[in-house]
Image (spheres, rainbow, N blue to C red):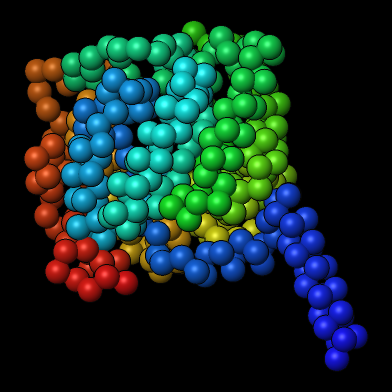
Length: 376
């Protein structure tokens, strides 16, 4: 009996050691798929409250608005959504680590109340490259996402001496919630090789700088042993053949525990992208889709996502200061004297009225969740 118990203890010890080792690096495909099998079908939105123009305004102490978060996440819950993708910003940590962590904890409590588990995005290469703490400028009339900021900014990205602060930010935030079931996953870097079409003054070697930092950022996050998966969503280029992938795409796919991607294409384009990622043998979540004017709609894409068991997170929940109901071309032709024929992104008006009732009915129907439907 004693030898049997000793053998059992040894087996358990080796098993735990093996598990710990596996968690210090990228998850195996088997571990990732086992995690995904425990999740309900993931459907949600990229969430910025309607009173915030960007990540800074969402989470700075002076403008953090738990009451509004509660109300708007309640609308998401009512239509069957169970996740939100939420962008953070490194300067929030530099400004006030304890306060920022406390506000994130408050936000997670509100989300959990509505049975929503967020994906937190740590870094982002999109839009304004010179983020500044403090009051944010008002929306530029008629322009899509006119106040969004990058993380890190161009100055910080180009400064090697700032890297320890980025490391502290990643380890601090991920470490604070590494064992918190309220967090669904960590999105390490949004569209890392996005150069924004040359719209802003950015480092000429931006892509190379990010490519050097991205594996480090994954390693920083893994060093605090999160129980949630890590990812970075591929969004451009050819994914049908590894030989055709960009260097950034190779890094993203090699480092990600679960595969995430962006697609604002017609449904046939969405389906082709999914099929190109299926051979990787890992869970797939589309973390950005739904641009009505570009052909990506709830009506056509969400049923395909369900067919392939792909999580689906559209851009935008409530129309507000980000003005993402306006199309991308508003950067060249602001919609000041006229409004677009249809909303580009977003689901609700600021009073909670759906932009299009059929869409929210469809989401409820496909998820089997939401108001008047038994929770699943």
